[in-house]
Length: 319
Image (cartoon, rainbow, N blue to C red):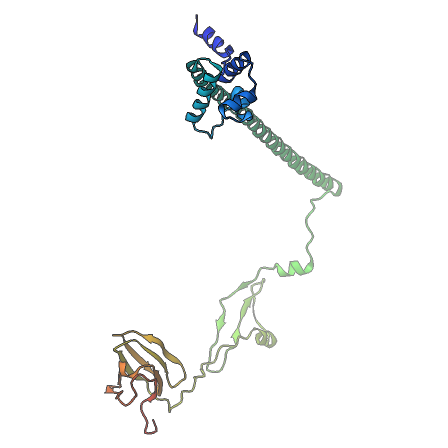
């Protein structure tokens, strides 16, 4: 037998499941599904599912095989035949699912092929429409150009002369060629007027009238610059160095009211400040701060330990 014939026979053979074998044996023994359920302690629906080859996949296979064995012993048929039929039924279902999967894959491939060819067709149609539109647009432009040329020729034949665009007197006057000498700027201590010498079209050099010179005058910036007055009594900037032995909060403003230091300074931090005195200083822990103001050490022992200290540098008799 050839391989093709063997495959055809295999496809046409319908596997006999264990349910059919058990149902036929039950009928021969004149038993109902209720009788089997009562004797095996099954549910009636469970007996019907077994005879219809409907097995619950959530139930372990060991239990399912046990149900089949007990049913086969009750109706007095071969247990091995029933189990073999059950195994063969499982193989047949797997083959059937594989065939269905293969069939679905084939259908998807065919559908994909159809979609692909349809896409190619749409692209070709779009390309063809683009080419047709391009040639039509070029032909329309060519026809419009030919029509314009014919119109101009017919107008020239009627009038007997070439039509030129008409220009207004103002445009003609503005299009005169004017050659000008380089601009000569006469600068003086208090004078910023500029004399413009213009060469007219006939080559004669003329000088602008007084009114024109006044209009063309250029006001140059004066050499006097307003300088900002600086108060003579401004105090010179001073230098202060803060050394922190521990974490300490500070707030320092200089004589202009600008805040030049603020926040918590870490232990070991050295801060150098330059500004306009006097400095309004607030420290959270004066015992942790050492201050050198213009080369002089500030005595911090006079402030209470652990209390906030507020003072002004340079120190005054009032502070």
